[in-house]
Image (cartoon, rainbow, N blue to C red):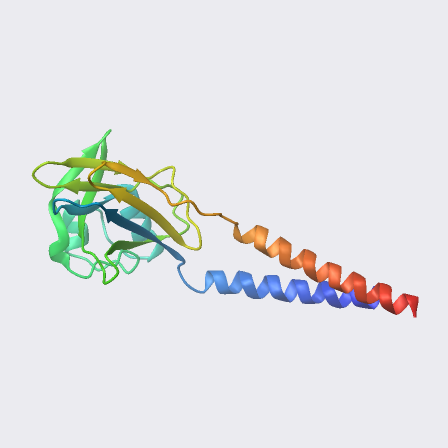
Amino acid sequence: MKKLVFIFSILLIIILGVLANFSYAYEKMYTLEFEASDVSKSFDLYLLLPKEYIEYAIRKDDLDIEYKGVETLKDNDIPSINIENKNDISDELYKENGIEYIQILLNQNEDGKYVFDILEDYPDMDMKYRIKNVDKDDIVHINNFEISDDVCKIEYNYDENTIKQPNTTFVPFLMKLLIILLAVIIVIGAVAYIKQRR
């Protein structure tokens, strides 16, 4: 029994070590996914990235770039902020409560969704969306939204002017890991019990 517990402990240490190394091997991202329904008029959708996030991405990418408003993204390539077309960066800054935001025009992908990748370890959900056309100029706050399986899903109903998160069951990674460990312990305990009875 002691030998079995020792082997299990060594296995657990190896698994946790591999997981720790894997998580630091690359910058982990999650995806903001915005989907619109009941759209009776076309609109432009902008992602508003706060100055703090841009400075955070610059530090994460270990770049020697000074934040200078819109020019920061227009004149530099920041790997953690993937913008395919620099023309999608608006010349107009958005300001709210003394915070400066750079506006990035988003385009629908082949699934009809607007997606953008965000650094997972950035501590805040302080980016926003701006929905703009002749009739609307609405700001969408997403600071209370949850990330599930590396995706933060946002559903927007244009005609009703409502925004929500789809009903999903969120199981954190650590909870999944604990469930797996518990299952392994139960199996090892059952095997050890059967061997003792023989």
